[in-house]
Image 1 (cartoon, rainbow, N blue to C red):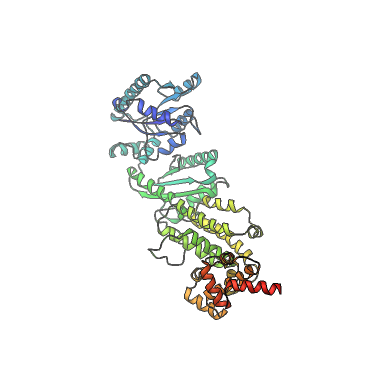
Image 2 (spheres, helix red, strand yellow):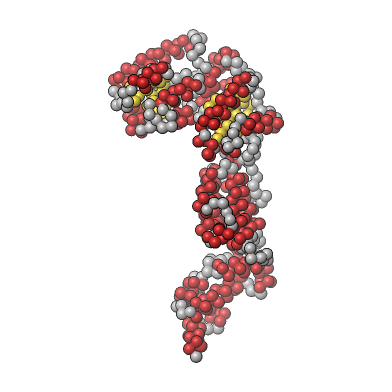
Length: 524
């Protein structure tokens, strides 16, 4: 069976072609469909079709441009063009590029089937010529693409013969992949220039082969990167070929050496795996199979530790900012990140969790505090930037920088002792569900120890002190004429009955009696 890919940006037409033609009965197998030229090129990482059925009008690059790009890459492939436009220039250009046919939409089943039968006869003849040793239509790039995609049916002997023919019979091999992320992916012309320069250098110096796989720029190295110095030198060389604007967006991974050309797919997939996990590594160097992920936390994280509750951890971050304790923000952020890493979470899962945690902080930060911190972005821009970071370490660094500035503004009233910070915090947040355990985590103490320190400094147990603050606030509202249940709710009491019992315990009278007395005293 010959492999076919259908390329059209309209799903209805893609599916229609797939079901309209009796592919198997005429010797073809549809291995996939694509909506754009980039999607086709990206698919070459895993499979190479023998025949492309491609529409003229597809997003990004036209069908004709796609054919030109594939020809530039040196990949032998046959093409059938379909179009909704009866344009002679389109047809002539397509035939000049080697297309086997040009059909107008809507495609006629019999016409298409007849054309495909003729194309298959040509492919059979070519395959017979190949088996008799005539492989001049192939290229060095085609051979490498075939091996990387795993779509090659070549046996070891044939690969060895072709390696000799294309001067690829080296003692060892290694695949290095270069990826551009973020804004750099839009600079197609600059990336193309980079690839061309690199290919020219590697060809002249006989160091290897440079390919463009759409997702990456791939380097097949003749001399694997054995020493750290060699890795550093190659990384520096890649940087030198790039414009300054693109350098921060490059990520490079090497897949390790292999002994045979047939094994380069192993090196390729190893490098690909490193790139997929590059968020968890450092920057400024080539990632290799022996590279370890960043160790962010100095605290030993228990293996069975649960994932952070984003609301709780976000509130803990806010606590630290609100009391001006910026020093404890970094370990809290790093501990959370380390837990996500230990659990094997993906890059997107980690970014989503950090977004939710920081959003909890932003919801509570007063606009005045944000403005006084003189930050370059708005809260919305700051939150959205979380998804744009290339590494976890840089994400933490940038988030920490903003939170520390907010902390400085919040805590600028002076250098309070930790107990003074707690008292200030209680005075501002008495109506919330405050617990000693939460404050203990915030200040990195055990709740038992912090409770004892609080008692020694204030003369009161934490819960007693909190109750008294709430009672005092409730008195103010009762004096202003609030109903008892209203004062209880504002002060943070869970029920009116509980409020009554606590009020009578600390004041000696009920809230109602207190309010009556205040009215009597006021009228007298």
